Image 1: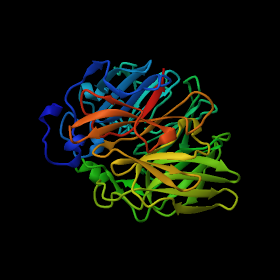
Image 2: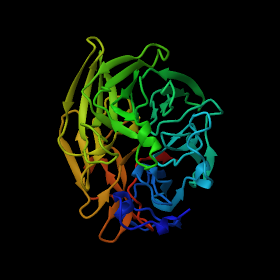
Image 3: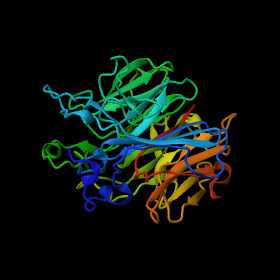
Image 4: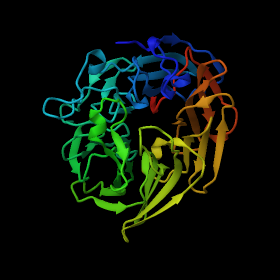
Length: 437
C-alpha cells in the first residue's frame, strides 16, 4: 500500500493544501502556549478526519486519523495524532460478505469521536465503531457485547437528562434499511427497532428532543450502478422522485409507529439542534437545496434553516435563518434536545455564532487562518452558553501550520484567550469532541 508521503500534490481538492494528509504519527509533550489556558479546562480535545494512505476518489473515503491535545492544570500536556487502526486498515477486508451483507469490521472510522459510558469510540456511518484509548491507540471494533449487528451513525445523540445515547444504523442493501438503537447510561444496548423507509438513502444525521427522535428520509439514494462502476465516487445520487420527509418517534413509545411529515426536497448532513415547543418540534440544521445530482462533489452550499413540525395539525413550516454559507453547526452539548441559544458553525475563514432566539449572528475571523469545527467546553456550574470556551483547530497557510485556539464564549469576537502551537498541521477534517477528565 502506498503511504501518505507518496500521494500526488495535485489532483482532487482533498489531496491539496491543508486537506492533504500528514505522514507522521507524532507524540509531543509540553506544547508552547500563547496566552493563558483557563485552569477549569481539564481533559482531551479530540477531532477525527480522513487522512488517506493512498489516493482515494472521494474525501469521505480516507483512512481515519484522530488529532488530540491533552489539557491539564493550565498547560497543554501533549499532542498526539494516530490513524484509527481498524481491521481493514491492518489487512484487506471486503466491504460486503458473500451473502451480500455488510462486513461491519471493514471501516475507515474517519468521521467522529465520541465518549459514552467510559468508552471513547471512533465512528464512521458504514461500520462498527472502534474503541480507542486515552492515548489514541486503537483497542478494536466495538459491538456492544454482540448486541449491535449493523452500522452506527457518526452522529449519535447523548441525552443530558438521562445519559442515554441514541443512534441509528443504515446502509443495508436489504430491508430494514435503517434501524434505531438506544444505549442506557451504563453502556448497555437496550433497543433495536427498524425504521420504515422505502429505499436505501444516505441518512447521515438525525435529531433528538427531550421527548422525540426525528429521522430524516431525504432524496440522496443508493445507486447500484455507481457502486458497481469501480470509480470510487460516492454510490449515491440525488433523486427528483424520492421526496423528503421527517419521521417523528416518541422516546417513551419506542415501538410505536413513526409519524412522517413531508418537507420540501433538500439534503441535510448536520443538525444543529432540535427541541419540543408545546405541540411542535423545532429543528435547526444546515440545509442544501440539493446535492450530488451528477457526481459526489460539493458545488452547492448549505445555509442555516429551521423547521417547525406541528404535531397537532400534521404540517411543517420551513424558514431560512441566514443567507451565509455554513457547515458543521454545534451547540453546548448540555442543551442537546433542549432550546439552545447559540449555534456555532464554520463559515468562510471564520466561525459564525447564530443567536437562535433573535436571528442575529456574530463572527470570529482568524485572518489568514482557517478554522475547523468548534466544540464548546463549559465552565463549571449550571448550563450557561456564555460561560465557557470554544476550541477549534485553526490552520495558518502563511506558515503551513496549525494551532488549537481557545475562545472565550463571553467575548466571541475577541482575541483568543490561548493559542496552543501544534508540532504539525492538522488537515481539515470532520468532527470531534471535548472529553472531560
